[in-house]
Length: 569
Image 1: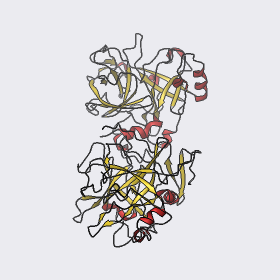
Image 2: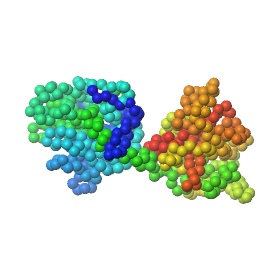
Image 3: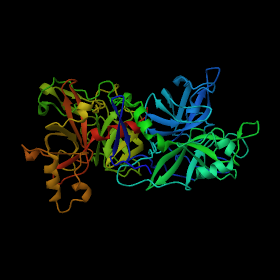
Image 4: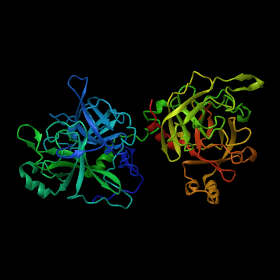
């Protein structure tokens, strides 16, 4: 039995590089399930988020036709059968430009599905010892040009290995799940994804069933499965996986490789067993050959990184080093958003937010997201219809009117909320509405500033109608953790100070500290990056301390990949 591995991240060396597979987050079915392989039964959208469709370019060069299936094992990598991506007349690999991978798909007769996306292939890597006549080493890896965006409908499956002391079960004579768009019982290609159970059978039983056929195909790195009763995989299912569930996670065990055919029609004979490449026997080959460059930063290389840090994000009209408390607050922090329900007092801001691009804000769980949520951009004094206020040298000016919109949809991870606006922010058309910059560069994501700039509307007080600012000091996590443990009414979640939390307090002047003039949840924590002289977002406040404990902020840098996974143009 293959022994399984214990690290959260599996490391392997390929050409001097490290390849990362996340064993803690793979193999979960996350989509809400509502709700043919030959004589199988229909699956539901999102039920098999790692099963992908492989399309080949047609002879006219203009279109693609469905040919095979594959399994997503990493946001960059698909495992499939070598015969799906090599030329029939030889072992020569297909040109990457002639292969198209479709992820998140359920109905492939539809040109597009909301949850699906198409991916060009950067590299086709079939096993160098693949033998087309005997299907020996019938396995291949495809590297996508851009990583698949992980959603409930697109998830990687786990490879057949663990390292936490838990041993994966012996699946001999156990039933695995196979899914696909291959021929149905009517010998027609299925438009929707179907599934079936197939038991693994012994080599002896397989050989006894048809020694002439299986005698020259079976080897130590393949296995047989099936019922011989018409249920199983058929033409078009090649390259797909056989999946097993263990301790709530799904694992890739086999890759659909070969089957007998019916006479001269070249249609699968499901009165016979089906042959699978044993993917578990190729783990080292996958690790050593997975074409992933560890320098491909998951944030910098994300296809959605282009949607943030555009234009004048984090605009700062003062030279770097200019004292923050000398700057006026009005028309300085152009990304602040006020969130409330439409029926609430418009002068009261129960929830702060921050604009990260024309379509999205970040905030926390401080309103009822199942109800309508109003978003006001470009405001300063919630008590005035239009803000007029002195700025530098007592210059008196008036801002443009605010923009009011609503939340169309939202996503939540832990306490962080990413909300899409129903109408885009008028960035660039009004001087007092801009997006803040997000920490994309690894150096910024890993940096802890000694001081941060805090902005937001407060819970109460004479100045609660005005956007406020405070300069706060970072508190070491151990200090923050020890303080929180002493708070008698703090919840276990509040006491759990992880690397995803930034703690702050104004150590020099408690009268200006957020702990005694409490800012509402969603208040932003920002700092100016010297090289660009722009404001970058580093935190979103989770709650209110009521003068008894440090202020805790969600560390935005730890959620950058999640943010990029969920935003769209």
